[in-house]
Length: 170
Image (cartoon, rainbow, N blue to C red; front, side):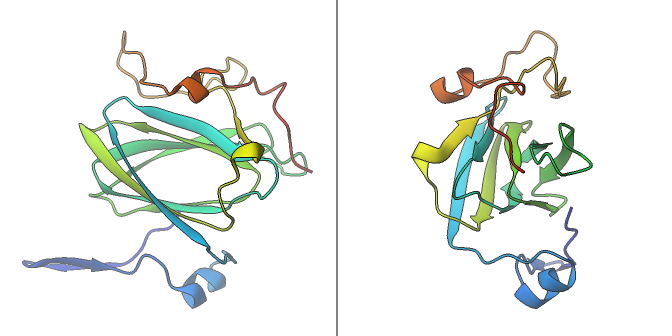
């Protein structure tokens, strides 16, 4: 989790969203090559996505609205292998999340709509992209969906693979 310093007054605010030296000192050694921006409506669930080659580290943030952001550790050598973690990112809290390579990543839009921005350490590679099932009972992710509400999913996200079957990392 990255909590940037926000400078605000009656006119608005300023926040530094990427500064290589500061992030390097915090242990985030990343060189970005691609920026992405998505806008989604409420209860859209995107993910859980990963690339098995050309793995991507992602620095993610929300500029408008709010999302529940989830990562799942697929690195066999990690002490948190197989665990998931979720956090709210919003335009109001200005938080950013560093998602290292080897983690599956997804979001659920919890506001009317949300603008989601992220920087990637490698290029999008469709032939290497995989989708981990958002609703895998083994993971038991606690998505904050209201009772009786189904998430809006893409065709790709409806075909997610269970944790037991998804490709893992060393």
